[in-house]
Amino acid sequence: MGNAQYTISRNGEEIEAGYAVETLCEEDRCDEQIDRGLGHLCGNTPGGDEYGCGGYFCGSHLFLGSGAPVSEGLCRRCSGRYEAEHPDPDEPPQTSAVGARRAD
Image (tube, rainbow, N blue to C red):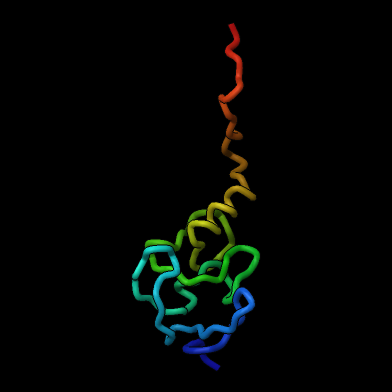
């Protein structure tokens, strides 16, 4: 079986996926024509996994560099979630100045 077209379950719904299945980027207000191939997939697994939502996004809305072990990338929401759950150990923790007192 090839990856041109196949059926997956995502969010309780059966959808067609594969590089022969044309669709639009799933980012709000984006009308970029893409396919539902692995090159546009958020995460590693069609249908979603522990890293990505399983949505399909254009190159402008699929991001690498979060540190997540994914092949193609993560959408903005999943990338932000992964980075929040897995902070960079080389970065100092972020602190808020709200309510802090100045030492005199």
